[in-house]
Length: 362
Image (cartoon, rainbow, N blue to C red; front, side, top):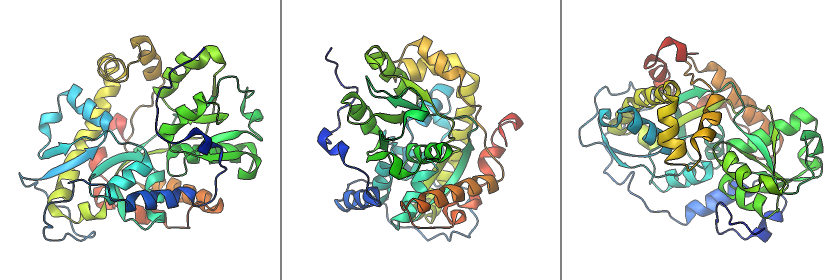
């Protein structure tokens, strides 16, 4: 049966069979950014510089504008009735979420603030781009499963040896793969890691150019609905993607007006997440059904296993997890060694936790 791919991205499928070479994705990020994406996030004249050790300004000038690349937060703020509480202008809400794409947007001055897992900030530091984490949400449950290609012989994790696995070095999915291999006692030489960005996983799976790739929701549900009858399945993995972070280029955080705007955004970001958790039916309808095109039934199943959002008031554990991740990636030759604490701007540390009820603090 011929099926229409869920996504079509222009990468030739024959390129997906190329085994991963160390630094491949690092080079692609640098090269793509060098092409010069255009944008206006940082086009405004520079204001008096704010040192990274200086106290955060308490007031947001009324003419301040940010470009915020967090699609789900935009929808959560909208659904929760919090959008009008932002004390600054949001110039745009581009739907850009893949870590390498966000880094390109940062480098092109077309994104001021984004949300990712803990991996993209490591990747940015590895290519010499200075950005900092300004808010942290902790996760206690795995949020990816290993989707198999239609007709794949993979029935469980024990079948991964010798298989082609979609691997995004600059995203959480990549580290989930590395942690899973480590748990299984496998090295990167025991499988073929195929370098892709996560949006390309679907096309590669559908075309059977990879045997498996990590997918999260609601993408996993949509993929299995379309290809489950052809033998695609989900294999549960326990490797944890512990961090969701807000992060911004240092050039944003040394601009007093934009730094104040970022600090003002964080409490609303955290409250919007707790609203979505407390109002699952409204969130399912607003996001999963109307925006993502899945059924309300599937939305309820997805939300039923969602983590309670947790915002740690102290970032020591988050920094430790980030350091462990850096060490794992450096051991595999994917990034240079680095000090995780340098990725965080701890001036912002208490803001999210102070904005939510005690049940949502770690």
